[in-house]
Image (cartoon, rainbow, N blue to C red; front, side, top):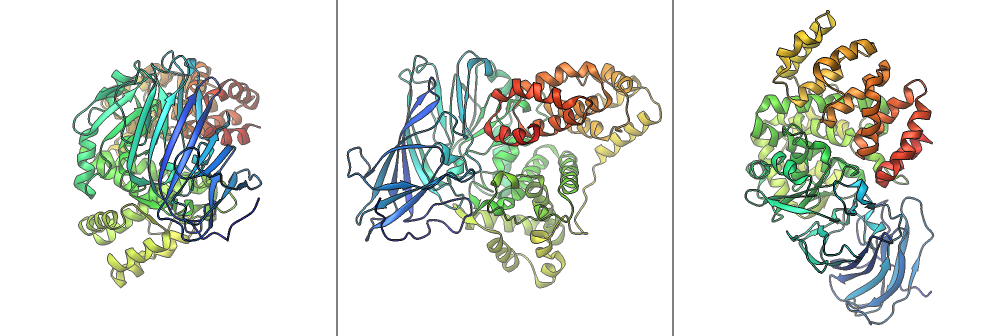
Length: 604
């Protein structure tokens, strides 16, 4: 096929995107959702920021898409355009190169997804909380290209609108939602229209379709969920509007209109995903006591750090997550007090130190600035970005004081709103606007950004509430019967129980665990965080009464944070590999590709 003159970069150098060419302004999606064939089909129309003065190539990211036609203009029937697809790459997919003529203002790409599109999870009714099929997307990090041709780089932003039609006999029973302005009731004809007037990167494109109802909460907030889940979810997140207000008091106005939550089926691979206007959350945080809602505070905080000011590439992922963890814990402190936030921080620091030990204290993977070229960016989704990034901000807080740091962060979000940010640009801005020369020398920012492990003066948080838990653990180790500890633990939070379970010695026998279980009923807990801490202890000790609950958990829950350590614990148990592989074979259809990509390698 003929090629037009060489393209110019559409986004700054991004090792995970092929995108090149003239700037794009707006996307219009038209999609038909076919549950029977497990495909999306339709068109993606891209409007250019300005008419081309000369012929130029536009290069977009695709992966396993069937490109049917490419036309000039924003309506069907425009002039056909020459296009080509590069050879496929296992991680990056294929570059779609389109020859745009001089004067072009838009192009329309007709296409169809493959049934195995990595971003899309199609659930049968038996995999949901109801009696209807379900579809949801997970586009982060570079999976948007598996359900539409796009510049799939966090450094490229665009507004979008969409027209979605649900096909098949259930079309009038299913509600469609996107990371946009959303309907609150099911359309009898199965047709929905969406509008996102704020410019977003492709990884924040999201779509969900299922038998969903809506409950409004106070202010700008509400909950979408399957009918069986909605009452519990509405009670669990009843303080959502208070979270939004607390976040605004800390770091400025919320810029995205509504803030609603969608509670997905349990196969969702993450705790949450910060899709604008509509955060996706896992049902594993529904405990009945609001003890795990810090996850929602985290996703809300992304409305500033990540959605508003966005990492330029996935090498700068810490700029999204480090700020967000710090912000999340400030929200929780504002709502529930510093002792509560300190517990969250101590647990996070413990996770970080465990991750550093696993990766190796001298490993480049423990740097904040990553170098992920040639690798799947999901490789960088570790506690380093989250918790080491948060510790850098805590170090700044101790160095300059909260008032100065808060003023800096507020101005940072305002000044760079709807822009990309890379590590070098942030370091220069921090040094120029916040730090004195003496403070900059004391901080030693290069050691944080490009050094391994943690600097020797990294802060360590203390928790008085965990000190009391440690005293209880000491009493248990000294021979106190679990039943005698019950009065001490009646008011414990989920975090205190998690710290308790993490603090139990690995030498406990099955009989020891039986006594603990008889008193505290860990195996029967409805709290996924506690189960995820309890099951490895049971596997190590050979505590068989937990076996059925573990297998049921692995079949039902698709959250990668839990699955990977639990399967690893299974593999380490006597006869565990055969057992793990048997469970995985049965459970795998319930997992999203984000989880199976990791687990396939672990369990092969």
